Every structure is written in C-alpha cells, then in structure tokens.
Length: 463
Image 1 (cartoon, one colour):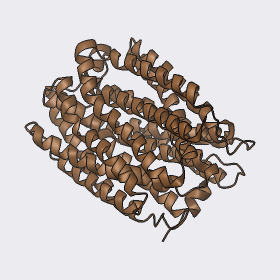
Image 2 (image 1 turned 45 degrees about the vertical axis):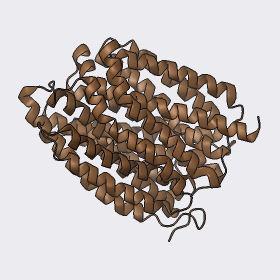
Image 3 (image 1 turned 60 degrees about the horizontal axis):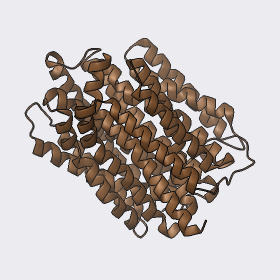
C-alpha cells in the first residue's frame, strides 16, 4: 500500500475508534437515571458504571502498550477493538447492575488496548512536521463523539431505551474492526525481541486496583488499608522499573525528559479536574432541574462542541508555537469554567450553564492537542507505544481519580440511596465541593504545564 494511502487509512481507523469510546461514555452518562431505575442501582453503584470501565482500561494500558511495541501495534489494536465489541454486546444484554458493571470491565479491557496503540500507530505513519495536525484531527474525533453522545444518547434513551446505546456501539466497533483488518496491512513493532516485564505489570495492576478500591471505600478502615497497599505496590513498581533492562514504564523518560514528565503530569491534572463534570451535570440536570434525557443532552452538548472546534486549531498551532503556551492558556480557561459551575443551584438558568460549559470546552480544546504533541514529540520512535500508553494511562488515571473522588463525596453526602427530593440538598453540597476542588486543581495544573520547557528546539529539549 502506498504511504499516503496507508496514512489516510490509519487516520480514518484511529478517528473512528476515537469517536466510538467517548460517544458511548457521554451517551451512557445521559442514560444513568434510566439504568438506575431499571436495574435498581443506587447513586454510588451508578458511579461504578463509569469507574469499572476506567479501572480496567488503566490496568491494561501500560502492559499492552509495551506488548504492542514488542509484538505489533496493529495486532494489539485489533484485539482491543474485538474486546470492546464483546463488552458492548454483553452490556446490551445485561439483566442486573452486576452484569452491566462486569460488561463495562470487558469494555475497559478493550479500551486499554486501543488507547495504548491508536496514537502510536498514527505517529508511526506520519512525519514529524504533520504530527500536530494529525493529532488535532484525531482528538477532534474524540470531541465529536463527546458532542454527539449527549443529544443522541438522550434521543435513543427516550425512544429505544438505554440498551440501544450499546447496540449502536457494537455496530460501530464491528465497522472499525473490519476497516483495521482490511486496510492496515502493515505491522509496527520497533521493540521486537525485547522481554516483557511480567512482575512489573503485576505490581502496577495491584497498585491501580487497590487505589480505586481504597478511594471508593473511604472512610471505612478497609479503604485506608487499600490505599496503603496501593502506595506500597506503586513504590515496588517504580523501583523495579528503574532497575530492569526492559521496563514496562520508561522511568528514565520521566526522570530525564522534562517535557515528557511535566506534560504527562499536566494531562493527569487536567483529566482529574474535568472528567466527572459530565457525570455530575447529567445527574444535576435530570434529578435537580427535572430535565428529560433529551433536554439534558442538548444542554451538555456545548462543551464537547467547543472542544471539537478548537482542538484541531490548537494542534496545528502547536507545530509552530510552543505547546506549553497554548496548553497553559487552555488550562487557565478550564479553571475558569469549573469556577463558574461551582455556583450551580436549583434555579440556575440554562444560559448560565451553557456559558460555563463553553468556557470549559474551549479550555480543554486548547489544552489537549498541544499537550499530546509535546509528549509524542519528546521521545524516540522505539518508545512511541510506551509514550502513547503512558499518556493514555495519565488520562485514565485522572479519570479514575475524578470518579473515585466523586464516588467518595456522593457516598458521604447522599449515601447508598437513589437521589431524590429528600437528599437533593446533600447532592448539591457534594457537587459544590467537587467542582470547587476541581477548579483549584486546574489552577495547580497551569504551573505544571508551564514548567515543561521548550519543545521545538529539539527532541526532549527543555529550558
């Protein structure tokens, strides 16, 4: 296949796959009240519909990113789409909350394999001078999925029920898998022949699972014990990765590459501060404001639309202007949008909510593409999958932390009960606490973004 044709095929497959996962996630957020009513799930259990997916994705991201470098990125990418397809089918057929959460774990496994390889495949086929533009278009497809998810999900839930979201997702996954097998006829494995660090993978997985379990179990004693176990496992993992010849995570990149380290830290902070906003707003609009799923979806569309519009522009600009400047401006706008949402109340108008989401969406759109360009441009080709998986891990860890804190706060302010008139005040109090904390976290993220140093004067360069 000619190089240009391969590039177009890789971009098409990556964009379709990048569209599917956020579309499903944002659509499912709109469906949460309906899912809870049909399957008898309380407010805390509803958080696990998102958290189970994120947890599984985080656990498998780094290990399979490394396996992709060794055995082939297309191979791991294809297996990931297959698992995502199977998980979607299982979710559509679920008859209990437990079955749905298990199906989301399978989806998360597939998502982990896809997230760790999609960007790496793109970077492998496109030259450096076109990298920012391609990343921008790929991230735009993520935001298009986020944009269409709320209104389309609300319409589907209203007319066909929440299961229709997973049936549609299954169809899109089947199309993506067919295109991958048909048109991506090349394999990429720059680390072929190197060994896989299985003990490191086990320590990593233990630390992630214990962290999420601990956050969701606080303030019970078992929660503190799980967090202690997570800290111990993480210490052993980092210590091993710094000594082994073929590490799962290139700790040397974090220690010796300032751009790579601070860009990943900025990504972790950004997703920690923003991911749970969609979950919280979906519940707020439907439980507090009394909106239908369709109405809630239309209100929530403004944020991802802004992200979809601004991410390609920001990505293209980051090929010429220092990514830290664009990304830091985006982080500042994100903090402003979260601060505006802090003042939500029972009588807050739709115009105010939409304006807050517009500011938040522009901020995140300006941040994401330049930050990704900085990370992928700071490493050698043989580390593309590891770099892609590390970025995706930071993103998913941030999402996991965001949902973990949300689960904790909802458990403290609402308890294991459905949200209703009797605990609406407690729910709003929890929302204010979370949004205020997220705004402060974004302010801290501005400094991490600025500290990364310069990118364009050379690979891995820093001030």
